[in-house]
Length: 364
Image (cartoon, rainbow, N blue to C red; front, side):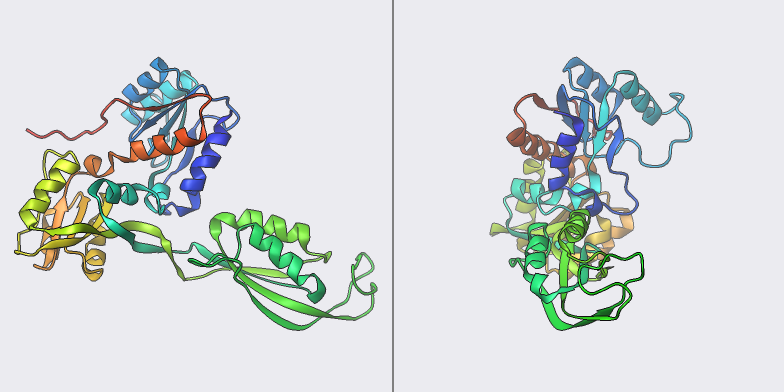
């Protein structure tokens, strides 16, 4: 088993194109062709994390947060980032990060928070744009069904709870090949008119390479006419945060105490209590103040996230309970999610949950 086998599987859960533009995800240190001896799963990659990987014979660290976020201009060990990277390289340990690719996954960070909190009927809070693309191509009508089915098999045409979706228009295509052409239909140098079908079909951007490969392998023409555009449509199952419901409503204070115990945090910072029953709860792992308005708009009674600044608590506007449980605390169960996911697939080497806490914040 090589690293590429592991990362391919991870990218089924959290495709890299799900990540936000500012992020740095994927294989940050190492070579995809390296044989795997063991995998250590962690929230952050620190020097002690690399030491743990060495001690446990793991040459691949799967980390939620990327150790390299901005550009590195030098590697001389003057910062904790440089020291981690140097130690990993010296000991032939690869580092892979999922971060916002897993944040935007339907089975990612926020879904795990919903599971831990026991929230029912979870849905994406902020559906992501730029994920849905559309392919339009033109094919001889007699070949249209075969091409359409091959594109479906490659992952095109899935919309919500439906698959094999496409739109088709019958028409006529005209073309003339030059002296270097080798037309499948017609004669080079002569105008040709052919009954064609326009096939329009949507797909997730993660499948673009496979769909283009399928199109070129199954289209009968020597020169294939096609267009791909990125739509502004949102993807209802991909995006930041989730919103669900508690099995039964709770008083605000009871909910905050439940939140503190369930999410294993020493501190819950919250907005003022407004004597509102808590039933509908929005969650977002990590720094989530940007989604306060989304939680309010979605009708949440409470919003659980982290890293709220002083003035951001005023945004509650006596309409929602804001609860800041801490950055690490909101994402801590992500490690378990990744270990469970990898363990189900790979059994010929160890997949180990890091025992080291990488939380840099302490409470007194």
